Amino acid sequence: MFSLIASILIDGIAYGLVLFMVSVGLTVTLGLMRFVNLAHGTFAMIGGYAAATAITALGLPYGLALICAALAAGAIAYGLEIALIRRLYHRPELDQVLLTIGLVFMGIALSGMMFGNSLVPVRLPEFLRGATDLGFRQVPTQRFVPLVLGLATLIGIWLLFERTRFGIRLRATVDNPRAAGELGINTRHIYAAAFAIGAALAGLGGVAGAELLPVEPYYPLKYLVLFLAVVAVGGPGNMLGSFVAALLLGTVETAGKYLAPDFATIALYALMLLVLSWRPEGLFRRTSKT
Amino acid sequence: MTNLHRSIGAAAVIPLAAVALALIFPNQQAFLAQIAITALVVLSLDLVVGFAGLATLGHAAMYGAGAYGAALYALHVWAEPLTGLIVGGLAGATIAFLSALMLMRSHGLTFLMMTVAITQILYEIVNKSRAVTGGDDGLYGIVMKPLLGVFEFDFYGRLAFWYAAVVLWLVFLLLRHIVASPFGLTVRAVRDDGDRVATLGGNIFGHRVALYTLSGAIAGLAGALSAQTVQVVGLHSLSVTFSADILVMLVMGGAGRLWGGLLGALVFMMIHHYAAEIDPVRWMLFVGAILVAIVLFLPKGLFGGLEALVNRLRGRAPA
Image 1: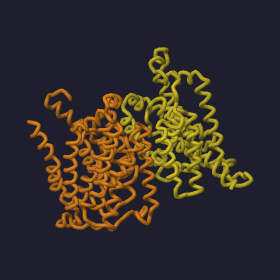
Image 2: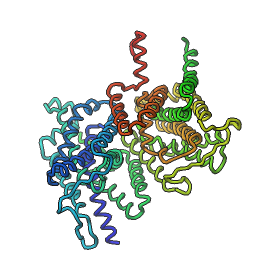
Image 3: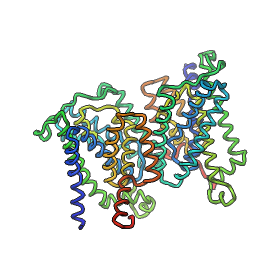
Image 4: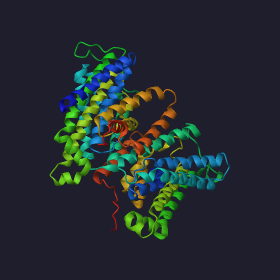
């Protein structure tokens, strides 16, 4: 019994942290920038492909591959923000939904053409292969990657938001774009940078979670609902909320898979439906400080 | 041209188009029936997306409910088509009404996510209830009795096409009437400024639930038509993918206009029929690029674009 609960918690938390890393950027775009981005999973997929290519084709070590993943996802996102996304900040939600679905379809097609339609493994370094003995069960060592990176992401984001000049400017821009602009903050630049940072984190999450959410062309569509669910349940714009929601949803789905494999998916969606009909703004509504 | 002439002219478009299509593609009537059925479900989607302004990725729930409802009815109760059609419509309306009670207080992303969740739950339930629904094999072996006791369903889909086209036509006429009615106007007012409608004493929740139920009934009719004419019902009819497909069609044609939905379904199905056989991957690239281009350059869809073009040719200012 104890080992079952512990297993569920370990796997659920690892899974939840992957969800958190991918979704945290989405909660910023959705909640703070008010842009409905259904293409966010694409950035995680780009990260996965970039890391796999860096390791297999270029022979880079795992750590550098992680950086490549973040850079590739961030750079592509930055380009997209300038070319397309920023034109839609003031358009209706439906337009944003449609444009980003279009981007998802294009991403699927392009990655299928470039990398083939099968799963692409991210090759692990020696010290992450094999299993670690926790006394009551063996855990694949790579499952600690999301644990470490996920917590680092949480701390990094908190520092970025609360302790840096960029964080102050971002919060100011979100709270009142006009006033922020009049005070000399380049709000367009802030939005683009925030979008790119969110995508870079998703790219990291794509690599860290490659074991749990394998990298393939349909990745952005397959897990789209999962990422959006984290944001919706956590309350758009609330990063700590996303963190809790990611752990909650991750653990519930993992528990479902252990206890009643046939009903894991139903349990996940039922939970989401319950939370959203009970609190349409998510579990943790972001209260504006104004 | 008087208003009466104009509405008689508009009412004749669907029958004329149906005759023209049947003459141009005499050997593809089963495919034409598919187009008519798809146009019907896109029309129902337009009520929610275009007229109520709610983006949904869960419209397949009602279409699938209609399809499975009509298929089960035909297999186990009575294989008569018209009562089966009613069963499908009722199934769609029931699912829509029940989900509307949960959905219609939310909007935006929350609404979108809840429609997805409802569809996925339904999908999983149908998938797991193998004994009743056939699971991922679907339901097959549906053989319908003759329509009105006279017309036999034929192998080439001739009757299927006319059957679907007539249902589409009748629903279209009904919707034209409803959209212009006080009810239709209130729904559009809620979309444009819900707070103001509430201040004026309008019942936002009630109007939305009624509209969603109506839309579900029509989607259910489309599902039933599909079950009866294709004679197979599969899980795809309940999938989010299908919901996304019909949303693309609607936007391509132009949301918020009944003609837009019809045009979108026709154009999308035609291109898909000929292009997807060549290369499914490039097809996705194409659909994606079309979506992006329409949002950026043609926000009112093909129909809106055509209308603007006609107005310009006539030397009128755009409406």
